[in-house]
Image (cartoon, rainbow, N blue to C red):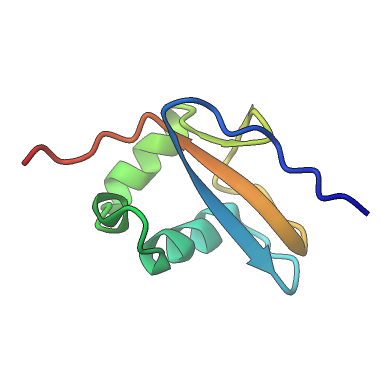
Amino acid sequence: MKDNIPPQPANSIRITLELFRAEKRLDTVLLAAIKAQNENLDLREISRTQFKDLFNGGKIQIKGQNARPSSAVAKGITYVDIIGFNQKKA
């Protein structure tokens, strides 16, 4: 069985969710995964308002489709792409 990994969009950050049970809301699972990752420290410091704005702006996608905060997430691996996250300027 071959993993079907969707292509990552340009100018995006990919978060891989590996769930052992289905979850009712994407937003809580995704925010926890963002806070736990170490690949992008600016993203890890995102505020709830900025996080909400990413959803409202259609910048959070699953398989190329805009994700909603209230979307359920199935058990297993889900690839979430955050498009165009603006990093802090040094």
